[in-house]
Image 1 (cartoon, rainbow, N blue to C red):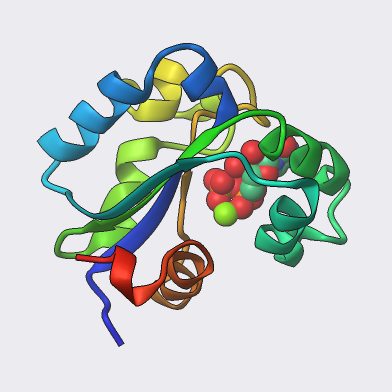
Image 2: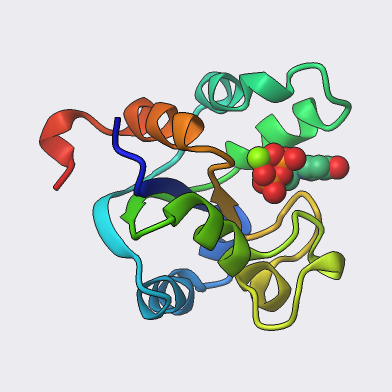
Length: 139
Ligand code: UDP
Ligand code: MG
């Protein structure tokens, strides 16, 4: 299994605020290479399946509604230590707790509308990349 990739989404708030360009620039500047990318809007069902691990959590319904509320950018990123380094680059889930200079500190609107997704393990990175991309769409 590939262990040097992670999966990200630029969430509806980041797209709506015209922050695709600045966020991708930060991702590239931090040393990540884009291995796959697409611009799409998730259905409620697709968002629910993507976040199925959070089904029992109180914010699940709101999260699914939010993530299907507008277009997103989905991407597979490559770098040594990709999962951990990307979590460092994006910062804490709650932007009020995110370190200065992180993507969420700079761009997130709230704990729900927090600009970006980042995988939390190599296993989930592989699963999440496969959820969005076929082999033909990955480079
Ligand atoms: N989320 C939320 N309220 C919370 C915690 C999480 O709306 O109290 C949303 C938020 O968009 C977050 C996503 O659910 O990014 C997934 O939660 P997780 O704990 O996996 O945070 P992440 O891995 O994205 O930092
Ligand atoms: Mg998570």
